[in-house]
Length: 201
Image (cartoon, rainbow, N blue to C red; front, side, top):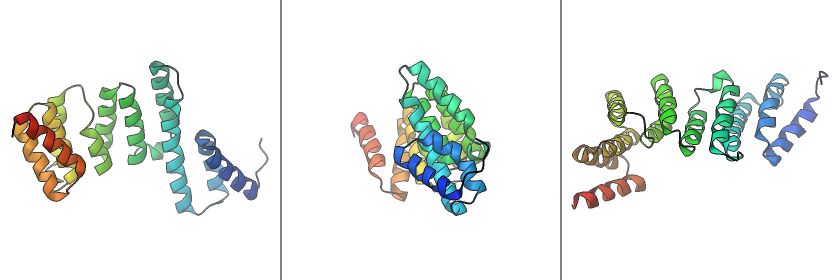
């Protein structure tokens, strides 16, 4: 259908797709919405992020086997517009999908590449959770970020978790306590409590 669509029709379609939660259809409609300035630019940017994040989350959940789900997820990731592939929300949705599908090592690579481009708390939090190919290298990489972000509670929590995975109990305790001093979060308390129970402290 090459005929230009009326802005009113585009608005209705946009509302319908959101209601139906048909995110792939909304993703396909977004360039037209932008071209006809159907919504303010800021609202369109929000909608675009929401739609692509949801489209990534939806695609692998709808598959019968893990293998199909992994394939569907990476195919959908390839269709994400390149300008959005550095968006932390989208990177996190992609990495979460990979993690849940048993591809933790791939998730670690995706998160690391994104964090190298742009440091972001949401991605650092995930980086501390995923199990990469080499836990020692993963810890060293995260420690390198500490120079630029010494007072980042999220990074310190991630470092605590990575130290635990490497069985550096003393280091884990130091990082978790430092994170707690900056931001008193329940999950940091829980990690520290587990560690102290393990150490019999």
